[in-house]
Length: 111
Length: 181
Image (cartoon, rainbow over all chains, first blue to last red; front, side):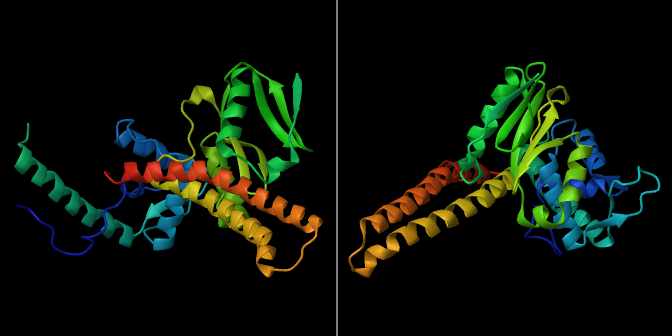
């Protein structure tokens, strides 16, 4: 059996939070995050604006994402990017997901 | 063409979000798109039937007070327009051709939205019912006038409870669904 060692063992990220963080490896504005997440999940997950706004606020508060300047993207729109701390969080979440996934394969077989 | 429908002043206090939303969307299905709410009237404009999807949101206190511009800017990015607002109640719409329009896409944020509303309904219910009943426990003669006044207060409180119960049921159902996920 595979198990995780290290921190962040007791908090699973919500699906929305996980995908928002992944999306913010590159600078994005709100609508861009939604489009990116939709693309990554093959159209399965469409973030609604109220949910996205709440998640962005919470992530800013935690310091997992931050504002960045938006020369590349349109002015006026707020643009966000992952912080180092946010990066660590995604990494340990991937370790956790890997455990779930691999144990699934071990017990269920991989076909 | 413009069609005006009187909006009862009571709606400023007793707004049934589900019913109100369903009614506005139903009007839109019949070709009357809500444009604004002013001076006690819903103002509808004739449009192609089902042109928009309407959603009502009760904004978070701090979003309403400090971040409204930010929030509306994000809504704009999503092609969502605000058509009306009454205190913390906000009426949004989006062109139906853009597909399904929700304000909240996951169970947690849906629960939080209903809880935010219900918090207010239950606080008001407690205030009205307890002030209506308080004199009962003073054990002194009270005038008919006072009896009527207190009865009215209790009735108002019960109205708030009636608004709160269906939402509590919804919250309960959402939480039950969430348990497995």
